[in-house]
Length: 229
Image 1: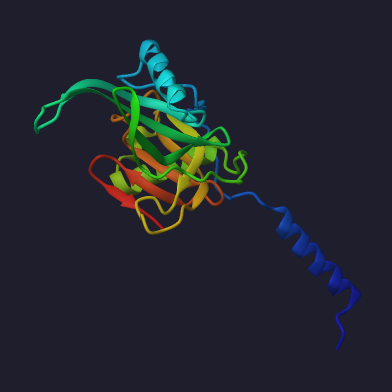
Image 2 (image 1 turned 30 degrees about the vertical axis):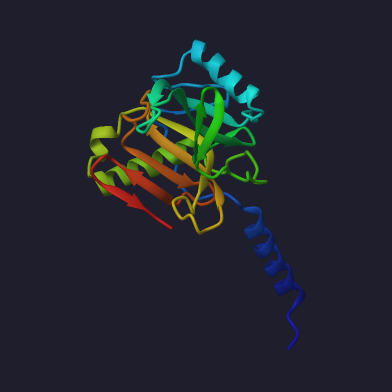
């Protein structure tokens, strides 16, 4: 029996409607939350100042290293002596960076550069290959606030303590295979959420959410720690 024209029209309308609705059905919390936008040139950290930013820029330039996707957050400069004859002394500079791609931070992407007497000596970490994922989020910051308060209550049992707090949400990317050296990089769009005006290592509680569906990737309050595939 052939389907009626009316049934075909209704089916087509339902399929079109489902395909059109790409929103994530999460209620928006109208409380305080800011969309924190960090640029790759916003170098910051307790060891970072304007003077050593110039030194770091010079180190990368003089060693022909492209630093256009690195935000500096740690710098040290020490005089080191070898533990064996002839006990040579040398200058040892260490730079820790956060990686960016498409102008957004890769929250799991961090590299350590070592320079010996201002000459590049070693790199710790595997540089990101980047991504062709877009830079526009699906979730709103109101939805992010809803998710964060929900998980603070579920995992820390302190939702009431933070219900009037102001949060900070940053949009970027997360490597779901971070920490697995034998697995290929798998970047997804992601939101990082913390209390407003908190910086590492006082960022807890902290959580990361997939932007496409709001699923929790990582949660940490200093005591309770949870990760999800």
